[in-house]
Amino acid sequence: MLVKLVFFLIILIYFFIKGTYQSTITCTQCMYISRSLEPFVCLTLPIPLTNQCTLEDCLAYLNEEEYLIDDSRWFCMLKIE
Image 1 (cartoon, rainbow, N blue to C red):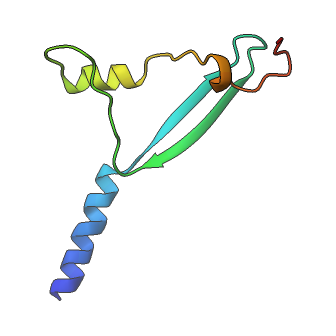
Image 2 (image 1 turned 120 degrees about the vertical axis):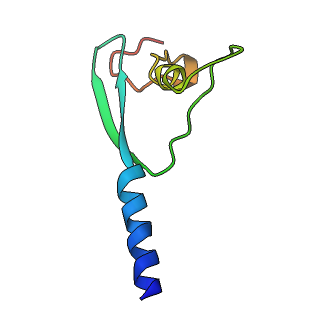
């Protein structure tokens, strides 16, 4: 009985803390958009370089736009080298 209760609690906790993060990459040359869904149980948040920040600040920092340069650029058929 105790094992079933522990198992139920683990499933219940997992149900409430899991999620899906959508990653979007847009090519600035051809405007192709690639979207992928990434499931997570533990979401690692970046911490902004400030003296104090809130959870909302960390989530906003996670969702800031990034620009890929040089070798980290998304493959584009229009890429001019």
